[in-house]
Image (cartoon, rainbow, N blue to C red; front, side):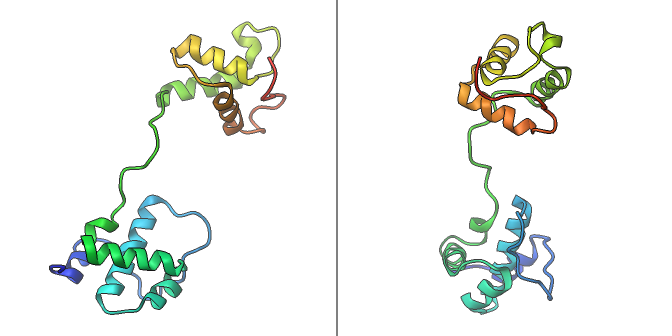
Length: 159
Protein backbone atom coordinates (compact mmCIF):
# COMPACT_ATOMS: atom_id res chain seq x y z
CA UNK A 1 0.00 0.00 0.00
CA UNK A 2 1.26 3.46 -0.81
CA UNK A 3 1.93 5.77 2.12
CA UNK A 4 1.09 9.47 1.89
CA UNK A 5 0.46 8.95 -1.81
CA UNK A 6 -0.81 12.34 -2.97
CA UNK A 7 1.40 14.15 -0.48
CA UNK A 8 4.43 12.30 -1.88
CA UNK A 9 3.68 13.63 -5.36
CA UNK A 10 3.25 17.16 -4.04
CA UNK A 11 6.50 16.89 -2.06
CA UNK A 12 8.45 16.34 -5.28
CA UNK A 13 8.28 20.09 -5.87
CA UNK A 14 6.91 19.57 -9.35
CA UNK A 15 4.11 21.90 -10.31
CA UNK A 16 1.02 20.54 -11.95
CA UNK A 17 -1.02 22.61 -14.31
CA UNK A 18 -4.81 22.33 -14.21
CA UNK A 19 -5.23 23.12 -17.91
CA UNK A 20 -2.61 20.73 -19.26
CA UNK A 21 -2.79 20.11 -22.99
CA UNK A 22 -1.96 16.64 -24.31
CA UNK A 23 1.73 16.01 -24.65
CA UNK A 24 2.71 14.26 -27.83
CA UNK A 25 4.26 16.79 -30.13
CA UNK A 26 8.03 16.92 -30.37
CA UNK A 27 10.59 15.31 -28.12
CA UNK A 28 10.49 15.72 -24.36
CA UNK A 29 13.55 16.02 -22.17
CA UNK A 30 14.14 13.45 -19.45
CA UNK A 31 13.01 16.02 -16.85
CA UNK A 32 9.81 16.72 -18.80
CA UNK A 33 9.07 13.01 -19.08
CA UNK A 34 9.53 12.58 -15.32
CA UNK A 35 7.27 15.58 -14.68
CA UNK A 36 4.60 14.05 -16.91
CA UNK A 37 4.79 10.72 -15.03
CA UNK A 38 4.49 12.52 -11.67
CA UNK A 39 1.41 14.41 -12.88
CA UNK A 40 -0.09 11.13 -14.11
CA UNK A 41 0.67 9.55 -10.72
CA UNK A 42 -1.21 12.34 -8.97
CA UNK A 43 -4.16 11.81 -11.31
CA UNK A 44 -4.14 8.06 -10.62
CA UNK A 45 -3.94 8.68 -6.87
CA UNK A 46 -6.97 10.98 -7.14
CA UNK A 47 -8.87 8.08 -8.72
CA UNK A 48 -8.84 9.23 -12.32
CA UNK A 49 -9.03 6.56 -15.01
CA UNK A 50 -6.46 5.26 -17.45
CA UNK A 51 -8.53 6.83 -20.23
CA UNK A 52 -8.19 10.22 -18.57
CA UNK A 53 -4.39 9.87 -18.38
CA UNK A 54 -4.25 8.69 -22.02
CA UNK A 55 -6.23 11.74 -23.18
CA UNK A 56 -4.48 14.27 -20.92
CA UNK A 57 -0.92 13.26 -21.73
CA UNK A 58 -1.29 11.91 -25.26
CA UNK A 59 0.23 8.53 -24.37
CA UNK A 60 -0.88 5.05 -25.33
CA UNK A 61 -3.13 2.99 -23.10
CA UNK A 62 -0.20 0.59 -22.66
CA UNK A 63 1.99 3.41 -21.32
CA UNK A 64 -0.72 4.59 -18.92
CA UNK A 65 -1.17 1.02 -17.67
CA UNK A 66 2.59 0.58 -17.23
CA UNK A 67 2.78 3.80 -15.18
CA UNK A 68 -0.18 2.74 -13.02
CA UNK A 69 1.23 -0.75 -12.49
CA UNK A 70 4.64 0.67 -11.47
CA UNK A 71 3.01 3.16 -9.11
CA UNK A 72 0.90 0.56 -7.34
CA UNK A 73 3.57 -2.16 -7.23
CA UNK A 74 6.73 -0.17 -6.48
CA UNK A 75 5.60 3.31 -5.46
CA UNK A 76 6.28 6.81 -6.65
CA UNK A 77 10.07 6.35 -6.92
CA UNK A 78 9.55 3.83 -9.72
CA UNK A 79 8.31 6.68 -11.94
CA UNK A 80 11.36 8.88 -11.44
CA UNK A 81 13.92 9.19 -14.17
CA UNK A 82 16.74 6.71 -14.00
CA UNK A 83 20.32 7.06 -15.13
CA UNK A 84 20.49 7.36 -18.91
CA UNK A 85 21.05 4.01 -20.60
CA UNK A 86 23.91 3.38 -22.95
CA UNK A 87 27.63 3.16 -22.87
CA UNK A 88 29.50 6.27 -21.71
CA UNK A 89 31.47 8.10 -24.37
CA UNK A 90 35.12 7.19 -24.67
CA UNK A 91 35.93 10.79 -25.58
CA UNK A 92 35.78 13.63 -23.07
CA UNK A 93 33.79 16.79 -23.91
CA UNK A 94 37.12 18.59 -24.44
CA UNK A 95 38.27 15.92 -26.90
CA UNK A 96 34.97 16.18 -28.78
CA UNK A 97 35.48 19.93 -29.03
CA UNK A 98 38.98 19.35 -30.38
CA UNK A 99 37.55 17.07 -33.07
CA UNK A 100 35.01 19.74 -34.02
CA UNK A 101 37.83 22.29 -34.26
CA UNK A 102 39.81 19.92 -36.51
CA UNK A 103 36.84 19.83 -38.88
CA UNK A 104 36.64 23.60 -38.90
CA UNK A 105 40.33 23.80 -39.83
CA UNK A 106 40.10 21.05 -42.41
CA UNK A 107 42.27 18.00 -43.01
CA UNK A 108 44.88 20.07 -44.89
CA UNK A 109 45.67 21.92 -41.65
CA UNK A 110 46.62 18.58 -40.12
CA UNK A 111 49.06 17.85 -42.92
CA UNK A 112 46.90 15.63 -45.12
CA UNK A 113 47.03 16.00 -48.90
CA UNK A 114 43.24 16.25 -49.31
CA UNK A 115 40.89 18.47 -47.31
CA UNK A 116 38.06 15.92 -47.34
CA UNK A 117 37.28 13.99 -44.18
CA UNK A 118 36.51 10.30 -44.51
CA UNK A 119 35.54 7.75 -41.89
CA UNK A 120 38.93 5.99 -42.12
CA UNK A 121 40.77 9.30 -41.79
CA UNK A 122 38.71 10.41 -38.80
CA UNK A 123 39.14 7.02 -37.07
CA UNK A 124 42.90 7.22 -37.64
CA UNK A 125 43.19 10.79 -36.30
CA UNK A 126 41.12 9.96 -33.20
CA UNK A 127 43.23 6.89 -32.48
CA UNK A 128 46.52 8.74 -32.97
CA UNK A 129 45.51 11.82 -30.98
CA UNK A 130 43.37 10.36 -28.21
CA UNK A 131 44.33 6.65 -28.13
CA UNK A 132 40.67 5.72 -28.65
CA UNK A 133 39.82 3.16 -31.32
CA UNK A 134 36.53 3.60 -33.19
CA UNK A 135 35.19 1.40 -35.95
CA UNK A 136 34.79 2.87 -39.44
CA UNK A 137 31.02 2.60 -38.99
CA UNK A 138 31.08 4.71 -35.83
CA UNK A 139 33.57 7.19 -37.31
CA UNK A 140 31.12 7.63 -40.19
CA UNK A 141 28.33 8.33 -37.71
CA UNK A 142 30.53 10.95 -36.04
CA UNK A 143 31.00 12.63 -39.42
CA UNK A 144 27.24 12.69 -39.87
CA UNK A 145 26.68 14.15 -36.39
CA UNK A 146 28.88 17.11 -37.22
CA UNK A 147 26.39 17.97 -39.96
CA UNK A 148 26.61 18.65 -43.68
CA UNK A 149 26.58 22.45 -43.28
CA UNK A 150 29.68 22.29 -41.13
CA UNK A 151 31.43 19.72 -43.29
CA UNK A 152 31.05 20.84 -46.86
CA UNK A 153 32.91 18.51 -49.11
CA UNK A 154 33.24 15.73 -46.56
CA UNK A 155 32.51 12.18 -47.55
CA UNK A 156 31.88 9.29 -45.23
CA UNK A 157 33.26 6.41 -47.27
CA UNK A 158 36.57 5.82 -48.95
CA UNK A 159 40.16 6.18 -47.83
